[in-house]
Image 1 (cartoon, rainbow, N blue to C red):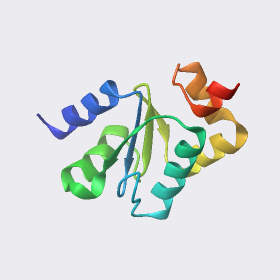
Image 2 (cartoon, helix red, strand yellow):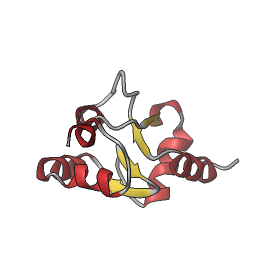
Image 3 (cartoon, rainbow, N blue to C red):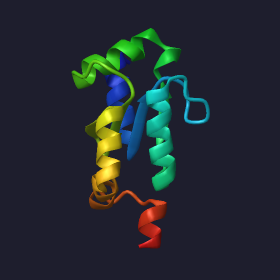
Length: 112
């Protein structure tokens, strides 16, 4: 399986995927840590993939998305963006709406 096939499979097999430096339990950069905090705050289940485990994955995700940086968030197969975009969407309430519109359950939707 090529790295792009692996990435494609992960994105299609999981509702929410975060390609990040480190793991959700131990982010290895501040930007990845911010996205983890946002996702944990909203309470959506997600799969974190550590790009530091594999140079192929680190470069492959950048080519796959045509986006130069990590972290990268995907929701229901759709590329959402990196840290700045995720943070801005969260602050505006747009990220929560995206999860709701895509049918991704969260703590916040359970309270609503």
